[in-house]
Length: 108
Image (cartoon, rainbow, N blue to C red; front, side):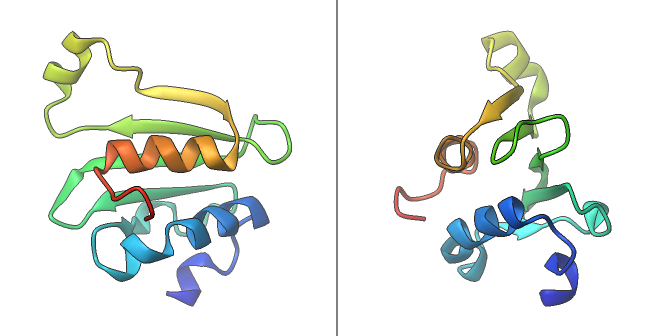
């Protein structure tokens, strides 16, 4: 998928590198919706595109990320009080949020 990622900021490329294993295994896919945005990318479950995450660097300090999570059953999640938007995350923190959100193995 070089065409989809060639214009992304370095920090987003580092994030994609950290998620290479689940992407290669088909557990996580890049959304075409954010293809031309160099400061953001979308991730989704191939078997459930409504279960997604929007990761962005705009409005964040250098080397930091924001993430906006989307669930298939949003009403259930909203009622449970799960935070859907988080900002000012380090690479390690955003990877952990995404691992939890997409139920990925610890060493994904």
